[in-house]
Image 1 (cartoon, helix red, strand yellow):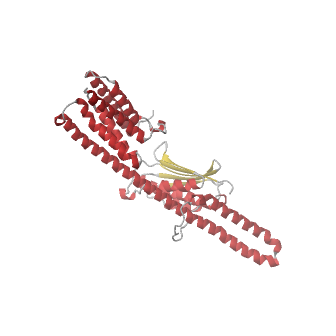
Image 2 (cartoon, rainbow, N blue to C red):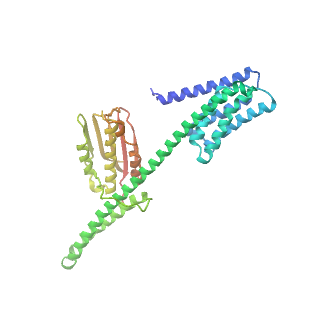
Image 3 (tube, rainbow, N blue to C red):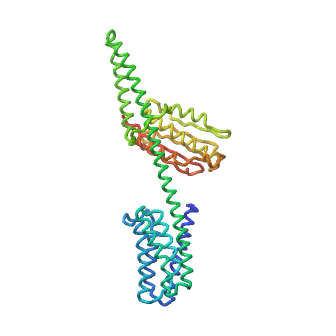
Length: 387
């Protein structure tokens, strides 16, 4: 039986409340002897704007259209009652829907249109009591005062959440930039390793050219192989380095598959066990250096997240094997989310963003999520095609 998340239950409850409030609006309008079509049209437009699933929403139905059109229809309904001298009640369904659209306008509309859309929703909401035909000093004034308070609270909350979204986007961008600079440092190490080998073998070839020319072929073959690997390393990683002009720091050590085993040996805390499952047929020679470094970073970040978020895990399994024509790296645990670390030590949540940047730069894929049983799993697959 499929379980329902608390978020799903809360969303379903909110939808039910909104629909019931809309039905009350229609019933109160009909009970007052007024035509229900105007309020029905306003409610249908507002509910469609609020409840239309994002995955099925057409491209043209952006936040500006969703927030402006229902507000304009509500304003026209109010203006029509004033011009014709007829009265009409207003109900909670339209009020709640306009507040929801005000929230959407402030949080999701483009910056140059957010204020205009929010103002339309606020004015439409505050104007609804005018349909009753009562004088301002009566109940209408009290509703407008309460409406101003609600508008301020909703707009303030939406603005705060929008600022959090912006700060997170900036942090994600900075994390990706930092990861690209780290990849640049790795690229320097990869190429330096190969070029150093080329230099040494070239010196040997020059010494052998005079007295042992028959033995030059293996040396020249080694030079060719090292040059090919250096070019392959650059081709795989340089595409992600879009930012230029950054100054490099000190030497940054690069991990490899052998370092993964050392990392797994050093990681366990008391009561924990790390099992390294490395395919016997997987050799370091067939895995490019930049892929080994990325695999090491995947394992390092995944183990760090286990320590931060699943310190109650008893067994952590690290897998290195061939899969789908590439290298598959997996880290899984059986923890249930217990952590002995303080909240300040849990990190900013951007480690996986940097990993995704590095893995996709090498043509691979990264997946992180809950397992079918208890625990969490991180899986990365790197292609191992010929350079």
